[in-house]
Amino acid sequence: GIGLFILGRYAEAIQKLEKAPNRKEKFVYLAMAQRCLRDYESALKNLQQASKAGADALNVGLEKAATYRYAGDVEAAARELKACANFENVSAEYHYQLGRLQEIQGEYDQAVSNYKTALELAPEHQRALFHLAYRHDLSGYEDAAIGYYKQIVANSPVYVSALLNLAVLYEDQGNFDQASLCVDKVLECHPNHPRARLFKKDIESSKTMYYDEEKEKKRSRKNQILETPISDFELSVRSRNCLRKMNIRTLGDLLNITEAELLSYKNFGETSLREIKAVLEQKNLHLGMALEDSELQTGESADAGETQDQGLSNKPVEDLQLSVRARKCLQKLNLHTIGDVCRTTEAELLGCKNFGVTSLNEIKKALGGLGLSLRSLD
Image 1 (tube, rainbow, N blue to C red):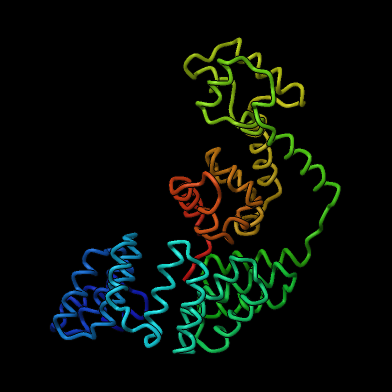
Image 2 (image 1 turned 60 degrees about the vertical axis):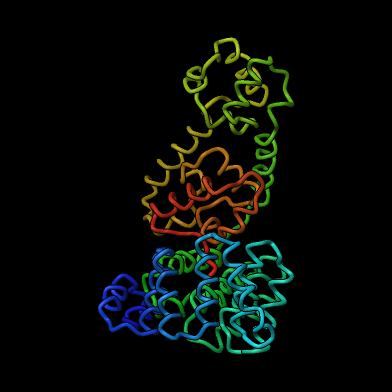
């Protein structure tokens, strides 16, 4: 059972462990396997059983805190850690778990301090080192982050997330050879790892990428036009109210909706439609224009005979067919391709104004349909 857990075969591990004799090791590993499968209630019950079976009180308390944190119960996690507070400056794991909780609470400086304390107490604590690196990565201290990631890679078995994050940083700096080496290490152990395969293709294409400055200027000017607020134009109160209720805020939003969709909305008639069409005509635009462009691009890609893998990372985010709100968030974060989205974390997306869990789940579902996922923390 423990061996299956180490291999990541959690469901099989649970089946074996449930048949094992009752002892503290059984309950601890059973709880951790259940937590990996997001069965937090069962995990907490087994941790309680582990405590009764004589498991170390500190270890049980810290595992409970981690389980509550994964379950989203921040208050319960804080209570468990408070009960372990007498191990401050003694237990590296205590400071690591405290740092993870503080990150969720937005106390980033305190979290960094606790990760550093954990490493002072136990320099080999790889998870503390990873999250210290990742926090510097998110804060824009790329050189420091690279240094920490390199320590992890040098002193531990293949740490997939550390290698992929390091590859992204190297790629951002234009150091494509080092980025490629990091991804190759992942693929040596996990040949079918979807994100690693995508990054490998992305890195190879970056080596021969041609940057068209004039084309980029045109795209920038076009984006400025599309981001123009509807409120900048003289529309009737009825038209303005209808658009607001439909969550249409910019000219770009209007390009993603058809005449039929507008007319199907309550209290929206031909007069309002003519007003809006007149506004768009001033900019040489028309309703549904973005939808037509998307269909054209899809057809051209098919005619060019590109395979799914070859074009996946460079496909525009429009191909994910996301809602207006989700698309606007990706635009604000300057994410233009599916590859860009896959290099972004849940935390970075949720940090965008007006972007919530609903939009996050929408993006995750769209990526999942392609066999892809967002960049992970662990």
